[in-house]
Length: 548
Image 1 (cartoon, one colour):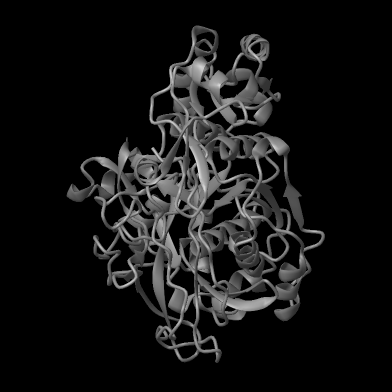
Image 2 (spheres, rainbow, N blue to C red):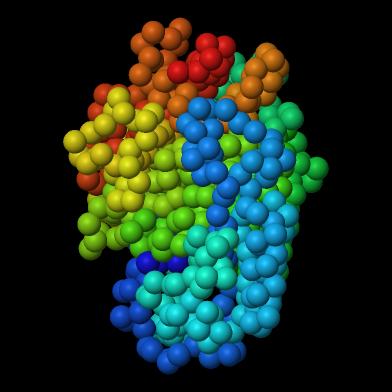
């Protein structure tokens, strides 16, 4: 169990020349390489100095995931592809308010600062570590790493007391271990013009599709101190300023985000170059799962937009069942209410937990109810248009497109036609991909400087921005929005040869350090990257036809 969100962000240095390479450029000496995954929680505990039991001065922020009413009915709704309004969800499936109020009052009597917000799927309860230990029958200990970082944690499985078990099914926040990484910023990268040409966005933009009327929401763990970088990027490329488009959400109960590392800036700038009129809302939280769950829950409860772009993840087998269950329940609500959710599959190839560990995926990209986005290496033609891509895999720096079978979740129905013997009947990741190799990465502005950025956290907002254009076109044609994207994506992949134009660039070469790319769906790149105009046309056909 490692309760640490890691940012799937890679920055690289290239020669400061034109950003239209016909092939990946060689990395210059002194380039910042992708950071290896941080140690698992168990490994961190082994190498840390044990400071003893966490005392009263240590505040533990617990998030109790609430049970839904009629879980079988909710599962049928999600499987059907139908959606409901937030009000209808609360009435049919939301947790029982009277039971929640009783649980909150009991926690408050025990000395916890416990709260519940109407529509939320969590009870937030903050209290001293000894009190949390007694409540959940676990030992919470304090540790210090060699670099001076301190954290509290337990490897014990919590037990919910009867007063909570009646309304709650999970708990997260029993540690605050996190794997922070320091990132360098250097010049280069594909400009917005390059991206629009390479992935065939121009026909959509020429048709007036610019994201107007769409809102994309993003969970983030590194801060955004001001709009200077964003507006410098917008000015540099003739895009609208961010001032009227961006909303920043903070809450003390979500903890303190990391210092700016470039991830939030990356996400916002890539979306903006694809869908420049889309509104953007970021939810800033601390990097630990307990605080992150609270921000994610509020993001879905607010439902300010129908598209989620998430560039966060952690070693799947090292995440606690409490966090996975709470997150999955919140995500079920998002799907039931018609939200599309794109998640980076990770930047360590098939080895999200580290090269010294067996292959493993990155949670939450392994959830069957999200769209996992992998990575490619991009090759442009001399004209700056699409030439080819290959799976991103760099064995020397142990980086590449996250992908492989889940160890937790069974293969969903939409994947039945692409089940691989290597998947052992489990959920297969990724679903789609786009450029992520740092050597062929994107141009951004961070810290007042131009930078070139790679990673699946660059490919993910690119897909989110694409869906904003698709949604805008669907609404324009009197059709429903995309919602949960995977059933449509797999229908398109299976029927690609019969469509007027192929919606995906099928990536058939390269590997992600364990799995080879190949024809059709594969563990390195999923169905491949988008041809934006063809993807939009295919989505119109899919929805007009009533779905798969």
